[in-house]
Image (cartoon, rainbow, N blue to C red; front, side, top):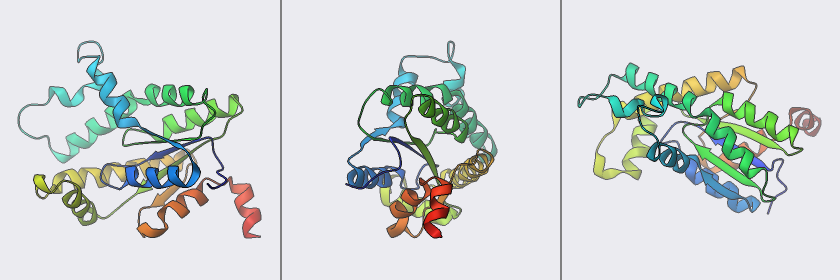
Length: 207
């Protein structure tokens, strides 16, 4: 086990970047529990509908034809924003448990992470957030091909994912949250861990 700088680590980023694998490695290194926020998303969507919670069901209302990349990105962002209270709720629940946790998911936004960090501070607990970023569409296409070969080449999905990744990175910068490049993969968890060190302490370490 390693001495973490956090009680809860939020690991955000677009689909297809390897968040689940990174979260598993970080949890293994630190003795933390993994929460996959996608499971929470599926649960809240299962007990709501477009009439009561339209913000959670943008993709349910699409026509049979696939939306344009621009439209798909808009819906992705809108859904993430609608789910921000759920992110804060998950963190609030984990703050009652004396076991570190890594919460990972596509729909964790920097705004929700910032709110969760403040909630943690108010409770005397350390909540950190790191956002993974990949800017190469071809790399994400390859990741999907490795993970879901039965679906063939998922170029548009990868293009939307990279654009969503850029949006998350821009939002993270606005909220003062670290963004970590996915590559090189073999150093990713080390770089994520380094990014959780408070800046003042990190600067002292470099000195």
